View 1 (cartoon, rainbow, N blue to C red):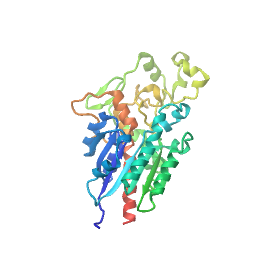
View 2: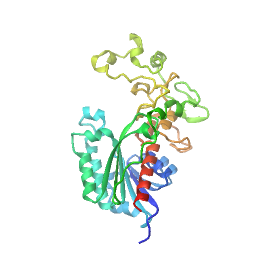
View 3: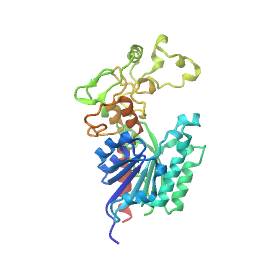
View 4: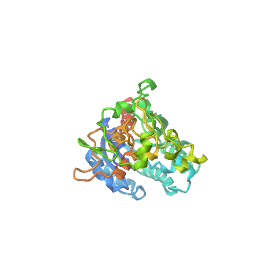
Length: 353
């Protein structure tokens, strides 16, 4: 049989393509991505040079996936980052929310059994390790082992790999070739990439303003009251630093006192907090700019998610919608994490050739 030299990737739950793009940067060929959000099509196809299918994973057949791989002489990688909302901290307190999404990892397992790819990767929130509602992760791992895969489960603190946000994720790798693991950490705490490293040189803008030279460098408008609040927030501070007349009623209650990061400012010298789908809103976390009186812009959020400047989120003639773009960026796997996963797989392939 011919030597399998090339690597082809199909990405389930691909969104706008953060994981795919990182794996592509590492040297892999991206064949296709699947997501139920059809508005992701332009960004995914434009940046990854791959086909996008707007399709529910429950309706995808193994035969269809197998036929998408281009060459019988390629190593086949199947990637899948099932939506993490049902396993998040919030979902632990709201168990009925997104309950139907628990089954998405089982659907991923169903496709694995049909397609039998050489290598599998799955990324999710670290909380899935402790998820009690259903043994979703454990069942998925058992499916892989039963079907001949060696599995490694890695809890990744993103700054350890040069990603400028304090995000902890689970990265699963599985291979039919043999034992597989992530590459060693690339950064020590003293050398973490910081907020200043990533966004410190961007042109200053005001709340509600768009940069003249970068249409993605746009910040949400603030109400008069919220503008007063951010002006009253010191460097690295939050709502606890405000005078009582600026505080929200919910913060004055015992139940609200634990949300110390809300309305907070980032600091230059450390990685940013985890980017979410609401990361461009001042009241949704520590998403205030370190110095300017506004929340972070779309460009700043994208850079913290390690998307390069050249990544195209919208077609040239399409208006940039803040809510949609924030969702794209917050839902994405950081590009650099995709690159680390890709490098780990390529090293593994080299080791077992």
